Image (tube, rainbow, N blue to C red):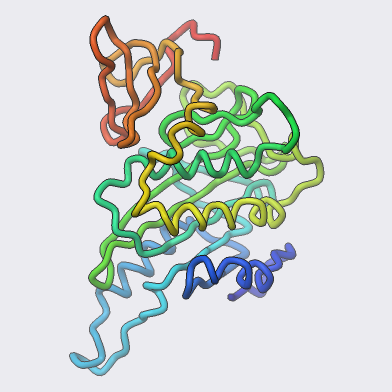
Length: 287
């Protein structure tokens, strides 16, 4: 565990590490006062570690700790990135921004963002209420009562003879200083303090970290299938008239590979993968 000297929030990193390390052996937790992008920082460490010579070639030890699981939190992220190159800028203290890097053997990571979104939404949903407040917009957004609450960015890189996955999370915590991510159809931004008055970023991380790591520890063997029913309950695109690239039709859910299903006619729904398109609600849609 390590804290930047300039951090000003109480993250409870020691207690959090003691809770999480048994789920993900070798895990380290770092909190930085300021960082360009937590995803970029971890990816760069992994690339450098992979490129460094081993000790039997030039006498330098490989930075093996960079290939271990790492939870990196930034109190202020200045160059945050969203999907398809969009920026994510937030005022200090107004958001929770963190990334988790870990080794994971994945044939296809397309469904991972959906499973992560489902787990985050379940963890953040206030208990004891019948109606769901938090919805999921394929492939990587969390919405609260029709406004964007947060986003997920998943990237992979080969390092040290294995595949490392970096899962980045950005979540609006406070009403002021909302991020702007280039969302072309956004109707405004939501913040977690609407559900939990007085919450701060460390408390939000404490809600999310355990269920997130539990998911990631078993995802390679289970895939998206165990989460499909839970995702369906929160799917904002199901039954909505939407466009995906050149296609237009009704959202028909997602398949076990994490692809969006679009009903464009009388035949079987067409599958749309996250790498091909950007989804938009059609003009005139209630959203």
